[in-house]
Length: 412
Image (cartoon, rainbow, N blue to C red; front, side, top):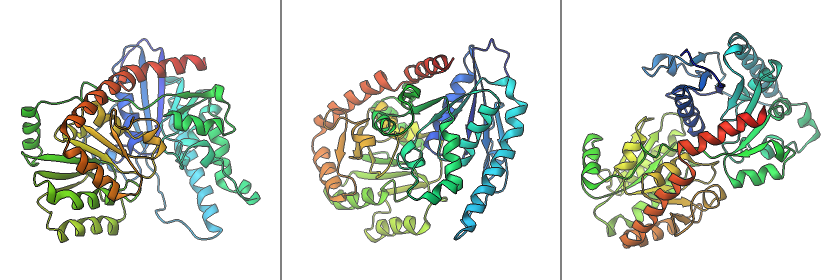
């Protein structure tokens, strides 16, 4: 630990450690790195190294305390599943209690960037036992928002482990909504709005910045991409929820009209439905597009370079919270396209002004929109400028970190 005059002493609890993590966990690590660099803050991360990849990786941090315990990868059937879930809660408790107690003098606040895992919600219970202030965030609508967590349609649900997990969730001192769409969900829940703060994810606007033509060409060369032509980019998990198949179908529909067009799909494939991924690859092969489509097939830590190498960013998801990839792409000054789910259309992109929206699940409409934009570079350029301005104004690290500081002070 660094010797600092501590004002904000924060413990981040995460159920996924690098290099295997999702959007909320990426945000948690980046936030921890920023806190660690400040003279008025100290941070630790207590994380579940679920598959041992953190201990095996070269990416180590002195403020991360990894925990390991066995997780059954297969859900039990029938009533046995509830015993399995209860046992999992106990394992989370015993894994967390020792480091959280041992390190209790190193933190005043417990900060969960994801409320979907039992691991995170158990940490809320332990935090309250230790007399700490607890903040928990909603990162995925339909998964860890209060209405989804607190939905018990049958009276028997109140005797199931999920009800206990919801009890833990409600013990938090503050709840962070990532956007106004999520805030509206909180307004319909039993969580008091006096405990809810709206704080989006942030982006490093100095790292995710627009590039000139020569720099873009150099980055493409470094990443072994196509040096010429226009690149459509997707970043994220290669799965059905993210709608990657819609983008592949739309690209196949328009590629003949734009010989210089390429498709770059950046993200891991190993932890998702392999049949879904093989079907995507088969579509590409069947249309003889293997030279115009690239799957990185792995997690990467240089998303900014892939974005700055590209021209158009597309996120065709059917379900999100506050997708970080959208604001990173906007900060890079890309033409950004997202599905019309409220999490994107009502919280991030103003259609036609700083980005574009297409009907969720409709690859034909996506291909029509891409065709229209690729034939109107002036319209694209105008939106790219406004997208960058929006990222600077609302989502920079400095703006968001100040909101967190205000949140911590408000609890006291």
